[in-house]
Length: 202
Image 1 (cartoon, rainbow, N blue to C red):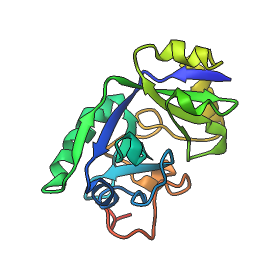
Image 2: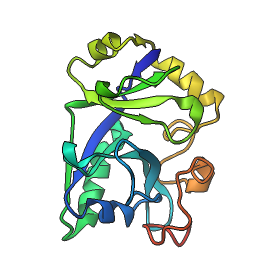
Image 3: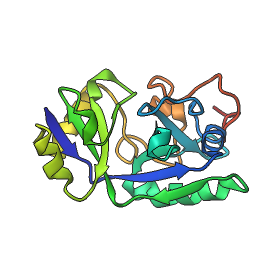
């Protein structure tokens, strides 16, 4: 079992009684009825239908506070939090950056559930599992779970080998439509869910 600690990812928490309806109404994928520890790949778009930021939405069980964890590019996480705050209006939603949490990718086999919030990468079976876990002691926790830490280049090689584009490397944020980044082929757009920001163009 190989693991990569993702220094280029950041975590946000979206909680509150309106969280499912709020997120569902603005992102490209269906998130309203996600089962706990299940993830979807999605994006927030401009009104013109171009990708502001793509990210994962992971449902959290009520016993762990409910709502969602967002696994997003670290360089865009602050901007994502601000834009979500702009769109929430009067919705009963809290958007909280969580720098105390880290993201890891585990290849080769499913990691133990008690390692953190474990979810399968929904884009492609070859991309393994992702884990949100406490940032402090994350490397030691992964190694204690039986993982061998490897360089991020291993992950990039796997991603490229299965043809998964990455924002900032393979397409430009703010200038790319979802279908130009293969989001429609990677399950990142639900064409039956109804309205979301930029939906008419998409």
